[in-house]
Image (cartoon, rainbow, N blue to C red):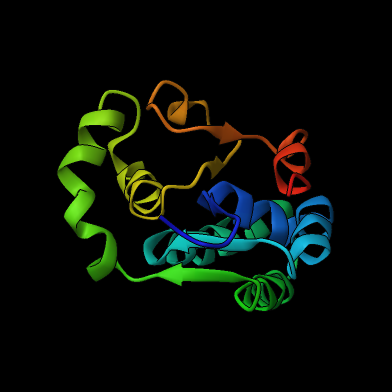
Length: 142
């Protein structure tokens, strides 16, 4: 169990940080009180999707990648070597919804933390989930 208050971010939250202001504001507001985590693969996925989304929206992908890079200073990437021991259990919990999301579940199980996501695939996994419109209720509790 972790000694600090923390939360695990899904890749979609990282993308929201790259393209919007709300998530960035929340990360910065609570950076001194809360530890933010994401699986290493989620950060790599976010980098890949930033380019795709930027092209679709006709935005500067370099700028969005730069913002995502700044968020890396606030969100700790958890190496797969640390969470892979939870792969089987994680897949049992998420496989019917989205098997690609098992690393997020694994990090949440490893650190015994809730997940910040907009993805309903995490609901019903037995792990608390928070969406952006409600996450501050969790983050501001001491």
